[in-house]
Image (cartoon, rainbow, N blue to C red; front, side, top):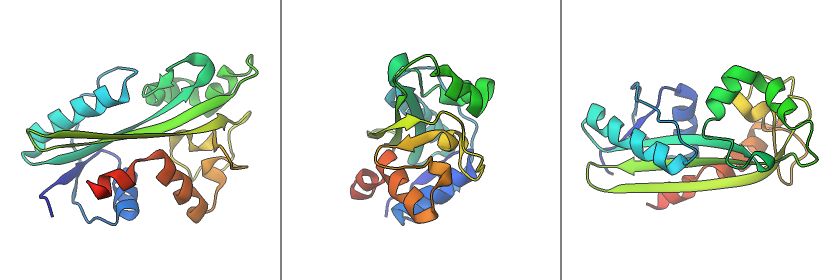
Length: 178
């Protein structure tokens, strides 16, 4: 096994990464600069290079995005700031004047060992709910995203159903194979 560390400030992300990959990779929490870009691969590359300097060993980092078709690449990887400013309700209201509530939830995971950079990306089509779920057990925008083929938001799903869709959003299989 490569001497790698998963770097995130979000303990839930680390827990799910271990659970979904079945790889026992240690977790470290560092504050890294998060550049502002609509390119998720650009963001994780920057995070990986910075995390490598801090960890002094190979790292894995990730980031997520949620894009609304009618808004192009937005909010995309900037979803964290849209969410903080508008909240779940405000994100739903952004689409009220449009007939199209199509959204794309995605993630990028990067590995960097100081020389080799590998980025894995994946996204899943779905829709934005008209109103947020009342179930607050989900992470962030999970209360408003309904994956294509599902009837509920990610936050309203059973644990097994959630993990099925979570694995379609995040490129865990590609990381495991790598």
